[in-house]
Length: 465
Image (cartoon, rainbow, N blue to C red):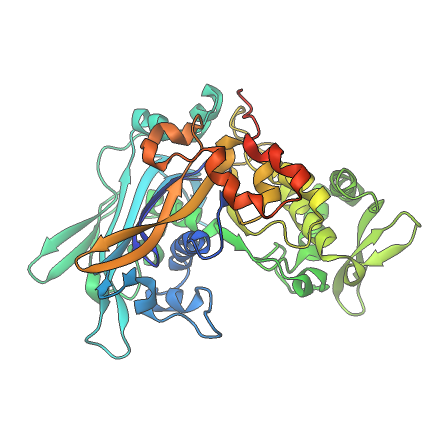
């Protein structure tokens, strides 16, 4: 679980700190930095799977091209950040397995990870150069203080566990350049020359020999950004396809089939998803997976109110998005951080409140201990929809704005995080970063029918209000 992210020098995120809860909505106009924040999260995820420069190439394309390394640094006028750093406070699942199936147990569940890069312009092509990396424990008392969102003691006692005094990974400055030191954890340590490394330590040395490093790797490896594509959600799944939903919504039939097979009574799995969908879409009467051995494919089918089973290719984009989210809500393998771009896409405005409630249901309940029925799972969405903002509580909302800064003689516009007063985040930020409903109102005013505008003068109450 990601509880805090501090980004400096990355795209237009010159200096941005965000605290996350189980369900977080990041709102704001287009081009203020909402997607850049998601890119920072995605970059951390990609670094667990790919070498540094491959991770750059897998970030979202701009104008049909993969981003150049220099495009990742904050730049305006004559100013360009000399480095960028990403710092993540996380709660880990301590029991993990490495790629060889060897089990290990992390020393502590609460950690802070930091990684930093600079641009090496002397090489052609230019490349990102690792300059710092660290993984340090957060004590139980510190982690409980830093867990800012409202939660019960039973929840904290199940997510904040273990004990560790020393660092797991640190950066040592030598004459030859920065060296990344992996400290022993029941095993001999290791030192990596940072500028020469093609991978981060977290991405390249995660094994059962370093259990806490492995647990942090597994946490960030599980993060995903959903960019749901109608064609991917509609497609049948091949027998050889992965049995988990990917970031596009592909392999949905295979994921449901795997859930049904694991519980041995597929009708109960189908019924659970159907019942959840029935609260959202009246047309859905039954859901099933059609298994065709001849073509070796699984196909999603939904029975409508006329009693006819319709294949996924005949369903609307909004219905398919609901099915993906309803499946994630019931899938015990869907854990960790799930980022969702513009959840309102393809959804009728009247269905948005139900969609928001479904997202809340996917996220962990901080009033209960974690377990099979309450997995450690969180949802972060970004939106510029006034209708979405109208239906989230002040504790669930972050508003991304922009501000003008001066760096030397250069003047530029960068992202700025603001939060509603009286929210739990407001206690962690200065008043200059508080935003009242009246300040959001001009943004909303031209985007809703006049009869609805007065409703937006107050945020929805929090659960504790």
